[in-house]
Length: 150
Image (tube, rainbow, N blue to C red):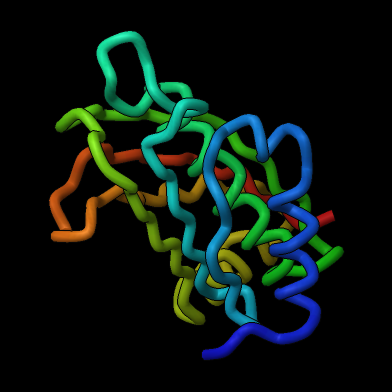
């Protein structure tokens, strides 16, 4: 699905936001329905660590807010959405540009709506991998997101 004018504008603003710029990463794409987001993290002077690979803080920070922001847009103002916890596993040093694709489908949104219908909060777990151009996984991240109806 192509980007809309609104998601293109959001991507542009997000990439200029100082906290995000500090990660060294870039949001490359936001689907017009907010169900898919793609980010890239190049190896550069801003992301390079002492041993010449991508800094672990950059690896985590480019994936940190994405699922939460997607759910905020997808569920709307009637829900409270917060990052609750994260686990990161460094599998291989990043020596080239890495990419991550985040997706949330309608079945997941319906499961959240159903689980929170009675006003009880729910924790949802999401996984994303940072991969190189050949698809080799360099970093795996598991995010736990807290969701509750207002």
